[in-house]
Image (spheres, chains in turn cyan, red):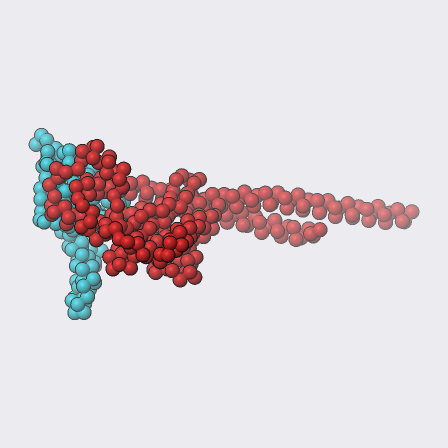
Length: 137
Length: 291
């Protein structure tokens, strides 16, 4: 593929990725979307999930948690709270977090606590996304 | 005149103090480097974030978002970010002074003021005024984005409940290693800066975007995030300023210790010399008497 789009992933801890890629697939809040080179200006919020980008035939995946993304001038920028590449993910920790979140979710459901439930759900989603991304590696 | 033993003891004491202050100076220098790095890492995020904020808010009416609603001000909340630890010169008291000035300004207008204190020092200082609504202590040592988020949610829900009509943020801005000054910003209602808006209009970034979901829905997500970013930024600045202030304070203390040691050594030598002279006089006087 000739034309590339510049992908930038920025978290509060600094830039994670900055390179030219062929295609980016991201978990938008209204569903997954893919972005190719020369995409029209675009702004979307991002939910917890996996971001996949292809570069020279190899596919890479990373886990992103809530934020938003902007496409302009053949550049796609993700501003997310955290972004982790597959090999950076601590699988054991994610598994523990998953169990913990499931337990808390059950408790919250019993007591009908809205805030706790939302928090536990977010934690569970993060853990699941981490596990999914780490399995790929 | 102090005895030889007393002076010697005092010199020992001052020496030990200077060891502690110079060690603290070095620790502060190392921590400052870390804090500055953290600030540096965060900068790209804020820059991109502000760009997006500006391009979004440029073609939107601010009235439709509760967090941007400008109300008749009756209660003012001030979020004060100070350090958890002392021994950093006048750093915290400068922030206190700026805060007190703001409080008395609002109170003279007959408005009620409540405080949210981030950092132990501010909490301890303002606790007795009875204005503190909430305090977050012992988090300045090692804080993350989620610490800032907890504070932002607390402040936002208080604002949305109508308990506060305007929220200020006061923190120690890091100008450079030698200079830190208290900075006051308006946190709520959110107002994207006018100068930035003009910049955006000139750059022509406004409009022409495809939004997913609708711009209003994006804004609903972005506004709380914006608060997180503001508070996290304030905490980073305060963190770096604290270490820089401590470095300077400890450097001064070490220098004062050195001055004291040289003064005391002079005193010690004088006392010793006086003792020897007196003894010599005794011996000479005794020998003279034997003749």
